[in-house]
Length: 502
Image (cartoon, rainbow, N blue to C red; front, side, top):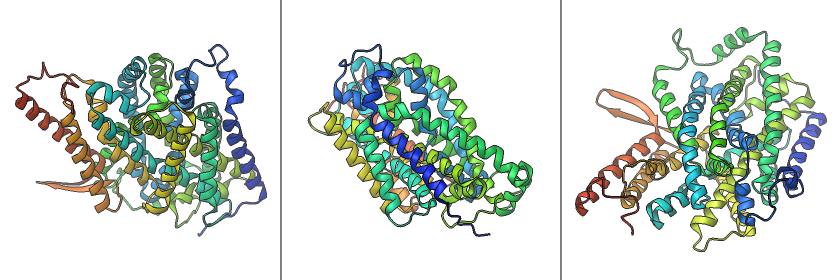
């Protein structure tokens, strides 16, 4: 059955009203800000910090939706079901990845927040510069964050473009609409825009997902029938196996590398640094697993599409075509708006996080000018647009995983740098260079695939490229660190971070 269902005017109207209303609400956030800051001094922070970090005053409620919202993106609603539709159980690697990351948030992020608050830091590169005293290392961490977030924003643009295409628009128009809407939303609202509208986005996503996991199985004859039908369309596996034997190692390593990378991105760290206290972050880490439950339900949409007879040459169209096939046209339009808003809000935070890196760490003269931050954010979105046009990944999810390969190279400087390992800056720089070259080289050779085949002795499997590159990075850093200590005649107990400077 070949389904390419076009919506009627009701779907288009509902989509336009919900999507445009969110953009207008976020873009006019300056008019709504007094409601969020009734008890705070209006001019307490510079314009740049207000635009880029929301004044560092978001409480537990706002931080919940802002940080948790990073798990509800086009990655979640479009890319994960598309991968499940194409590969089956392998696409569920996103669930253990989110489970692994919550203890990491609880243990590490409050400490990073405290360091950033005490030092007035706005980015990961600020923290690294203060700890190691190296301008070169600062630039490397900043460039990693900037480059890594571009394909991630590209994934959000693809999500918005996908639902606009499902509404019957073709050619470059859907991508242009996605780009312009994101640019306007971010330019005018700053970080307060996604903070204010993240609640709306999550409520819309909840409604769409709950309707899907209740109504779609009923329409298809129940979950048993749905799973049976999906099994007939996916590669057959031995009884009791959820993933093929050759997918076990890629599944595990992609989950682990994604967990390590998740809160190294500039947008997730921006949400953390915008919180008003370390306890706010801990509270969110405790309750964030609720998002994993909904993520699992969303992943099931890929299996539901098989049961509904959805056949499409573009895996990204799986969820929109499923909604059009099952729901009334007007509600499909609402679900499309939920997906588009679900991409718009986190994409805005991503662009702001990248703009913070440009203004604080990359430009030779730092500036708190909100205009400079806006221009930087716009330039980042143009770069993401280029990723959509020129990076031909097989699956949309590969764009996010490609960003993970890059951002993981900041793990030794930012996270291991918090440990009493006394890592010298030159060793970290060498590890970053070799790890980045190795990771990007493997991605290029493998055609942007996020895994690389490894054969060693009797072991043969595909392993997460990001994890391989990080392993190379750490090995080089530790070995060179020992060499530098021996060369200087310093013991690990006497060599302090930042004592070796360029």
